[in-house]
Length: 245
View 1 (cartoon, rainbow, N blue to C red):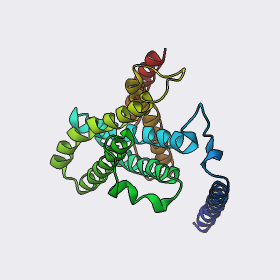
View 2 (cartoon, rainbow, N blue to C red):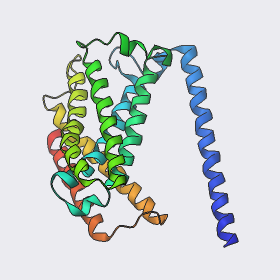
View 3 (cartoon, rainbow, N blue to C red):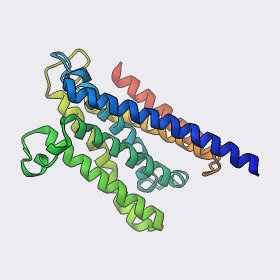
């Protein structure tokens, strides 16, 4: 038992050291940004978004997959998926918080956040993106609270709102890109492509998290559930490939 504790403690220290190194590297990058401006994130005449908005899109996509699985379990009565609703919503909350953080960083200074509340421009599609993401986060938090409490009735009602909101988040993001100067990869079906891609990445992340939890003995799920989720991921990938092709 003492050996296992010592091994676990050693692994914990390695994880802490690695995370501390990542934090230090991030602080260094932030200092460099303050010195040289947002231009170092990859912004140029042909790419007006840069690293932060790219990361924002990535994490929004990861977030939607988890919520779509959790909501579908209650909307369509898929009992097997209900078992993974809690970890699915947790991954969704973590990812949407990361996405929101990248938007705040992209402002160039956190001190400017208050302007988004006192001078919100409803003509701007970015304002609608912020509104949808805020609603999305609130829905995730409520969903998690009611899931933990075991209030199935409230979860079932909320799921009927959460599912279209999860799709709407990517539709608004696709709308923002569609309003920009046309690029080679822009398409008339960007919204379906964004939704399908989000289902790909989000469900893949959920599967990885479930496998990690199962290996750590924190969550147990059977092979049939794994096959169902993997089959659903294969369908999402096929649909996404069809849209892109």
